[in-house]
Image (cartoon, rainbow, N blue to C red; front, side):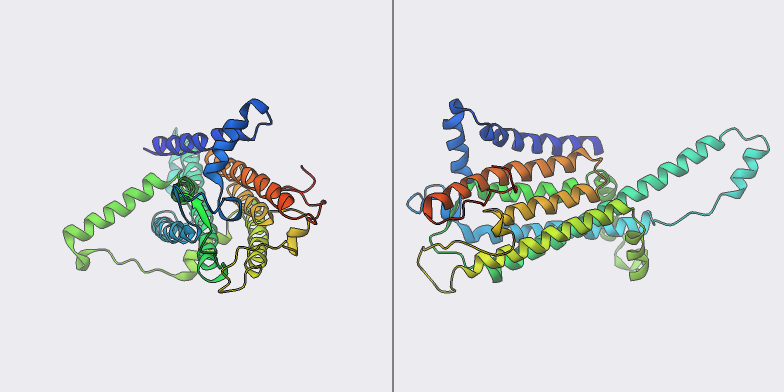
Length: 338
């Protein structure tokens, strides 16, 4: 089951990456294909207001962030409880009777050590999944807050319905991918608990006393890569929040006009879409925090990069066409790369 879920997720990410990657290739013969893909990706100011066919209001962003918060919280809570109950990240005492057996003629000391190491590795993977899901929840909670309280979407702002569905795909598959290596055990843990509750009732279930300290300490015992990844994540997280505030400040609350202004401040002085650059940094932080060894999480990162690179290039072209005085020293999304 584990292998099936992992490969299904990887296939889904690859299927999402390849069409966009093809559209990014600088071949003139692919211009028609590039235009088609861009029509699906356009939203807000770069989507013509007269073209409303197969579009939804841009404020519908809120829908998949509500879903993301609920879904990620469900995965986080279930995985955290499974980790707390079944795989505490502590040093196990040495099994002295087993050692005595090995020293007096037992033949499986190496096997016992290998099994012990394997259990510790599994515990580490589970707690790392908790850590990654916790970061993801922090991200989607902030994005939900921004869609409700920060952004003042124009009534005319639209996005393609395909882009709307893509948002639901991403915020379903991304949290699941972050814990895909342990999701089968987590699923069985949750299913068994629900079945026991249905059959025996609440009064017959084992009561688990949760110590907040014991539930948090294992996260602090993770490796240095997790904390470097978290630092990178929050670096991007803070800059994305600032850039979104700058974008939101360009439109006065209650203003109905479609007049756009050139944004300034923070990473806007370097690139045209710093909020996209910050998103790449955020998911790069998740890759580092994962240890950089999980192909599925690398594919999430690849999906984010190609999607945002395509959108940022079109946004940059729109700014240059729209404003004669647009700063020529700004890049599209990656500094010093045209």
